[in-house]
Length: 445
Image (cartoon, rainbow, N blue to C red; front, side, top):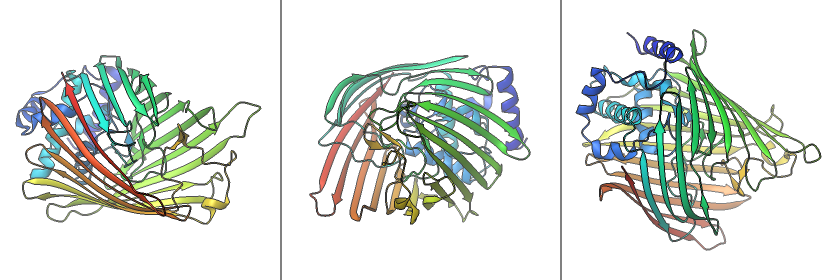
């Protein structure tokens, strides 16, 4: 059975039963026993119906599987439902070690979600300064905090209840950030909560909807389908209520599709609106796409683009393009990401109805759309001893001021959990540089 037919079978099964009713097969168990880094994988495991937008290393493994031809669904939409690509993990016909390891890592995380392993969390975080936005999977939006959560993936209902006491933008509060309640009914999924979202192909940049700011409370509905024209596809609509914004509500609808094995794309339409007697609505249209390139030895790579309109949906405001590749580095797995974002002449001349860029939560932009231009390079390294290293550098221009941002993160299994440490430095032209050193610890049980 081809991966495409397996996807069709998966969707048919979804219409007949719940996610958990597709129990682990003997092949699932075989793969779980083969995982050489269960300690690191178990730390990342969560019992949610999605692969969430919080782990760049899991995303790197999924992208490797996509670029190697194993994943028949688009992977440009996070949180991404397990049922969209889960059946593609049940086997692999590749003999490349990096592909096998990526498959085993994702499969173990999927089965951990099915079996509700590690669904209770304790986490602490402490930083010397406010966090610098760093792109996909940012660990430390807060400056410091203590968090605990419990979650459960059930036949129909899934939930996560998180309680945190944290400092964010000089305000220390008790909050329920990163909580949700979801209901699954075959190909449909309804949810309410405030989980991080990352829509698009970028890693350090995002022109559509990113997780640079804290997630706004929202309600969402999504549907998964498959046909001969769109291939495997999914559509999701959300309605959010951003805090400290010029608008009362934000609605967004996104279609993602993979009509060919080497090509996937996404289309997003967003609206920000307020009361009848307030400011007018703002709207934006965005497109993104990824093209898988021919592999070279053990290098699997792809190119991608994103483009977003101004408040006039027929007018291009900004675009980005990037290249990313994964390859073995000794006995380790490395990924390099190169990105460039550029704005157009209409970027600053076409004004938003409120006078300011609308995609803002808590006075923090949800995307990098406002940058005049930017280039970045990033390295994600997964070591054979389960340690993970992330390095990134970004050189941007905003309102004719140069901004240089560099960051180093290091994750290592220790103390029966995961220890995360990092350092970042941001230099703004004609201003003092800001350095942030932070450390965190996660324990799942």
